[in-house]
Length: 239
Image 1 (tube, one colour):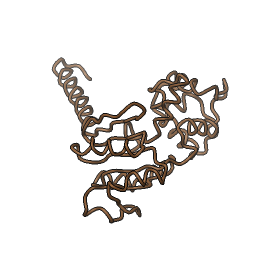
Image 2 (cartoon, one colour):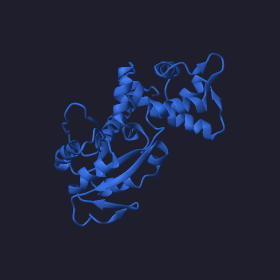
Image 3 (cartoon, helix red, strand yellow):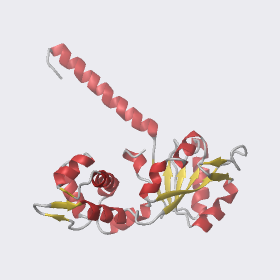
Image 4 (cartoon, helix red, strand yellow):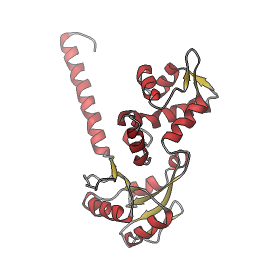
């Protein structure tokens, strides 16, 4: 749940703020990875780390990490490194994780239920505040201690809980209608797990998570590796 596109459940309005300061989207996308790496280092009792140490923990090269962090300010000391707790706080602040963000999930099938009970969100400032579904059999039931409510209650929930972020975990055919309902209710950031492209007006951010595409990309790389291995075997070379 924490890797790649699934990681990021954060307010994209903060990304817009970062863009105003000239922080590239690619850098913003890596900030949660750096934050996770810093948390791991802190849990190991490491108070100060070098750029090489942090880059290794984050899975990036040191030059890229130093450039990314330079957009946030000068938090490292030459010859010493980074104060783990201080840098962790600065990145958490940049990502809006120094406060909690209430999130509504629409679609409480297998995926929506799994997301609603995932414990990793709470440590990252994300709180699942409401669950919505159109299936009368699900409405009124509880998932993770939260009562599933009908789509007709969406506007009231968003207004009362001041919700800006939503997750769509519905079938593809329902995704656009749900998106329209979320936008009408006042949601301005959407994480879309539905296998469909949705359109939104200006001022609303959408991030798409398509697990099947990610698996297809991995399958492509596996095919390339197998192909390269076969070619090497045919020429008597080692891959």
